[in-house]
Length: 205
Figure 1 (tube, rainbow, N blue to C red):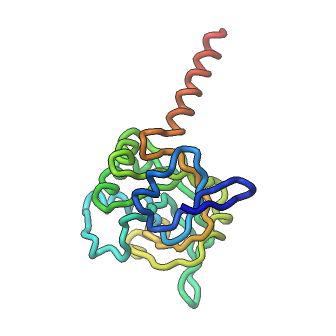
Figure 2 (tube, rainbow, N blue to C red):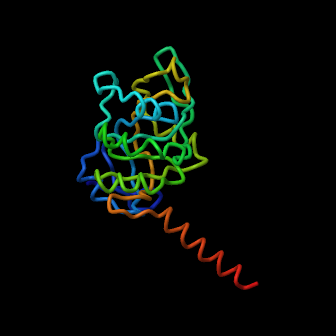
C-alpha cells in the first residue's frame, strides 16, 4: 500500500476496489485517502438491499471490494451528465440494522460515514475483514471537490436524489479508520472514557 501526506500527516492511499488484505492492513487511527470508485447509500438503499436482496446482475456496479458511503449528495445535472456539489457524510447508526447483511451478501469492503456504528456491524467487520471510515463532518463542499466525476446512478427516480445510489469517482478523498477488522472501535473507546469521566464528576458532588 502506498503512502502520501495530507496537511503534513502521513496517510495511506486506498485504491478502490479494495482487497481484503488492504482492509486487514489498517488499524484504528490510520488516516487514509481514497482513489477510485465508491457508492453512496442512505436509508432507502440499505433497506432495499436488505429486504429485496437484488442479485448482483441487477445492480449497475459491482459492490464487491467497494466503499459504501453513508451520504446523500447534492448533485447538479449538467449538459454532459452530473456534477457533485456537496457530499458530506450522514449519521451511520441509522443503517446499523442493515449493514451486517449487506457486507455479507455483497462483499462491501468498507463503510464510511460519521459517528461510527454498533456492535453488530463491528462483529461483521471482524468476520469479513472490513473497516469503517469516518469522513469529515461539516465539509460537504470540500469533499465534493475530491469527486472527480459522477460515474453513474441507480434508483434515482424511485428513491430521489439524496437516497439514490450514486457512483462517484474520487481522488485524495480523506477519511480516518475508526473501526477495524480486529474488533477495535474508537467510538466505543471514547464513549467508555466519557462515561468514566462523567461518573467521576458526578461523584465529586
